[in-house]
Image (cartoon, rainbow, N blue to C red; front, side, top):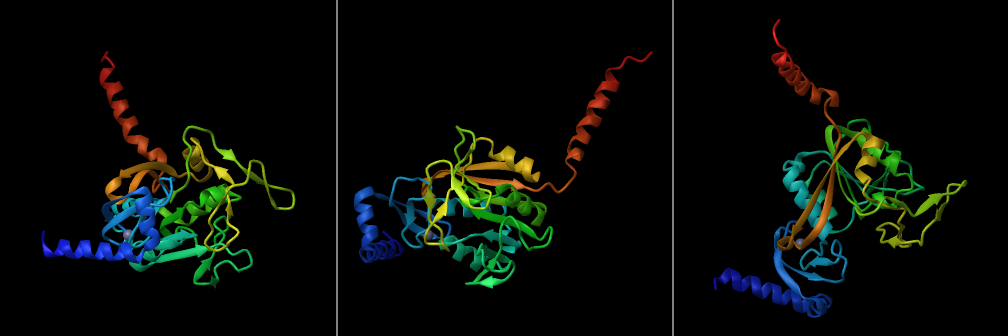
Length: 284
Ligand SMILES: [Zn+2]
């Protein structure tokens, strides 16, 4: 075995000893070797729970599977993303550190209800995703990671994301998705603007509010149609299963803002059909 491999094994063993909690998880649930696209090195992925999109952690940077899936999609579908102008709403964790370090024109925003839109607060730009203060056609990419399920007014957010994207730009996002069912609204606004639950309330972690974020919507098989109806964006679903990156069956969605009149896409086909029809017409 080469010295480099001895060093790698020593480093991993040292890290394992140092990270007792990780070691306990590894003993309990197992682990495997792989490559992390966020800390950009070989690593060990270990499981801390049973939710595939959340609970397989990189030993070095503590990234989770859906973050690694997001970076993989950026690398594959937007290879020049480091040179693009990107807005991410509600980022946190290792992927936030990675994106802001790697992309010069990356703007991270959080929603603080008491702060003026466009102001800076706790290192973030204050923005309500449904009422953004950015100009039209300003960004190449918008990123949201497990945000859409928490929005009180997702239609406004989708329209605003589309408005602030350049033609040809894209909204790249993850969201808990239930393709075998219709979208379920779990909570709604009452007449006073307060949120009231229809279904049993479910909360996810919230990086700026320790009380958590209520799940408003379980997005179902009509998600892509809803995005098109609300914002005119066309969505591609990229499913990633790559155990070498510690990713098991995670969907990353890419909603593109058309950069041309959609009607023009069909013109060439119509002209060809017309030529065929003319060639079939018998000469009298
Ligand atoms: Zn990592």
